[in-house]
Length: 82
View 1 (cartoon, one colour):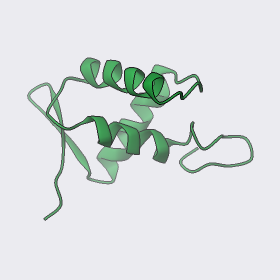
View 2 (tube, rainbow, N blue to C red; view 1 turned 180 degrees about the vertical axis):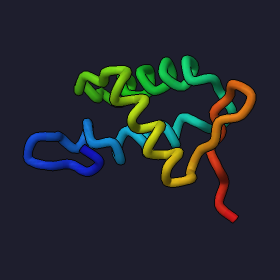
View 3 (cartoon, rainbow, N blue to C red; view 1 turned 45 degrees about the horizontal axis):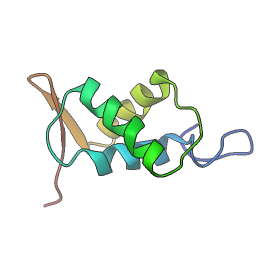
């Protein structure tokens, strides 16, 4: 689920989706904006794999657990390296 396996394609792995979310979070945005931006990004890059909203939320949870994003005042922020 977190990494690709025999049953989960690389495009559905949570690390892949999390990386895509990190790429689109160039500025603070709401969860809805991030969802829309991610769907648009995946379409532009010919990613035909269906992405349910629940997997998007799980990828956000993973990024939060890895301390790479934070949520404040209704906005998602990507943490920058020190």
